[in-house]
Length: 278
Image (tube, rainbow, N blue to C red; front, top):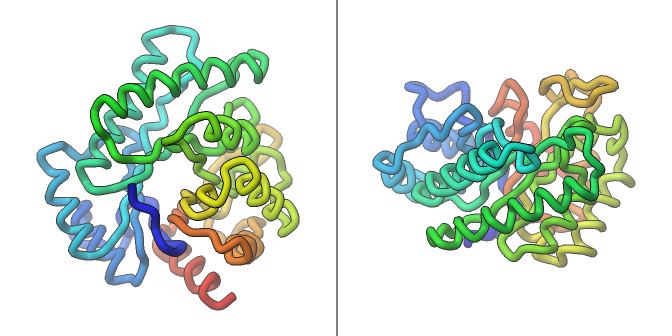
């Protein structure tokens, strides 16, 4: 599987400046902007067919752009109903199939909800579903990382501790560290010391691979007592993004950092510029 040799900065989806707005032109525009990666947004549905995927792969290789994807939002590996758990696994598998065919390497998804259950029970349920999911991924020969994302609401399974522990139990699993979600979920995680604690936890439990192969989300975030509300422009939020970038540089993090701000490429370029100037 791909392991980027440095930290690449990515847009969450096709840059706004792309014309006409399709995936292949989006990849070309990412390259024109001087960024290194793009996240394919499958959040409503997997919108790249297996027939179209080879052309996307060809363009990404020509442009030297690394691809990740965000699987559909409608996933809950802790669902009570077996059919919902199965449908959730299928959405992740279908995302992985499309991304693999596009030459991408890392599938992000929100793992699920507590549904009022004890966190330990939810962890066991999600772990069981991850085992089934990876069996199917491997049976299909898909060469991609499966990445549960830290979530932005306290009702959602996906604290940094839960996902680092979960990742340590499987070979093909690493977390998506969404620093904005960590902040929105708790109202904390917005100081250099707290960001260092996140990175130290990853290094301790996942080793150097955890730092050398990161999938990160970062943007401005609006939040309240119930956690995440919506993404904001970085400069219109209280997200201490400069401290995040400093810590990533201090730990020599490698991988892909995806900017999910509404202005897409503007904040992705701001993050890249700020990082390079540190």
